[in-house]
Length: 264
Image (tube, rainbow, N blue to C red; front, top):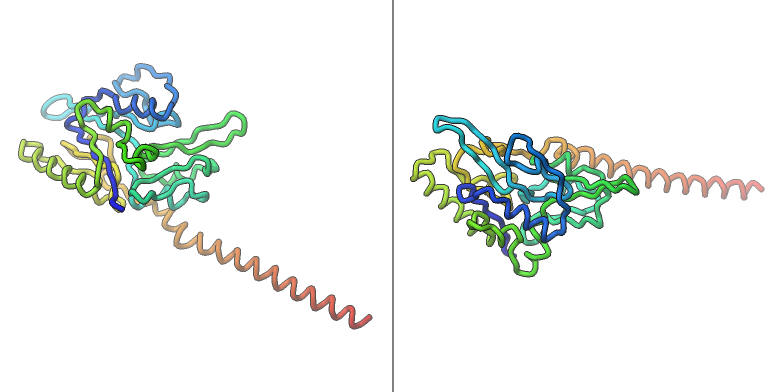
């Protein structure tokens, strides 16, 4: 099955927040109380009711004040730490190449929050139980699996967000980045085709990733690697040792009871 991906061309993005609104509308997400924080960026971060948001970064350089903004949400890593640490399999690798989320399976442990190098997952608290459910962009899995495009892609007025076959998106992004370099944007690049096994949401950037608030080289968390290679196997050995101990105890007890009967 061919993998799909999203391509965000930041040079075409106008910061209109159409994608942000479309996401809320499609998933029936509640609005948030916002205010003037000295930036056009609202709300200030992702949350349980905001899965997609437009980020604004103001950078002063030799040309004066520059705005760098992009449509931000889950980047759907091919090597996703959130999937690997999820104990209930609520987070999964979908055959189409994105990270799906089945909230009914989520136990609110929060492991995905600490594992994600992009700080994407958020927890929605429950006032009755006090336990949360993880939330994040799921690439409109209900639409994509039916052959439709994500809501944010459909609504983007300038066509800054594209969606389709992953390899085609990579080719399109690299071609666009090369064209920008020819136009004088020396730092232009395609962000994400190889990061963490390849991202499912890639970005055409006109400048260095840091100017957009993106990590230059995000890495798979060492703690998750240690958990998988060391502590998890030790835990499994511990379970086996417990089972073996119980079995041995049962055998010894049976023999002792047999001896007592013989003595009688």
